[in-house]
Image (cartoon, rainbow, N blue to C red; front, side):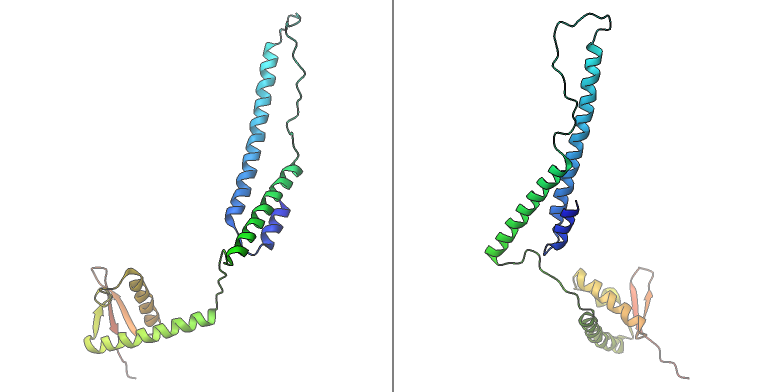
Length: 189
């Protein structure tokens, strides 16, 4: 098991299908071992019931039964699984070398560029919202997001939350579960 974990952590990519195959193989092996134990117990009970207690010699002589549960050791099973895993990985590397394509692309997350992009998008959105507020004083979210797909509507909603958080707009839920967007009233001291 440790060798499998080392092999997975050293590989270039994490293959969950390979981990699932190893888990399924282990589960099947243990299931077969348990079924073998139960089968041996049933055979032993059946033999015990066939023996006549009266002392008479049975007509048929039974061959001695070997009471060994495991025909292979755990080390043999693990080494076989390691060999299978190494063959699979070698096959994938050969396939990758032939096609010169990455099996799973590596994604990097850069928080600074992500935050800058969000800030730019909110700034553009703020300009369009403030111009709409100057025209109409207030408007409904459903009207503003009409003719937009669901992804854009969700994006608009999140942008409105940003604008409300910074104090640019007021958001108010109406009776029909729509959102009324209005400008923040200017207070003089």
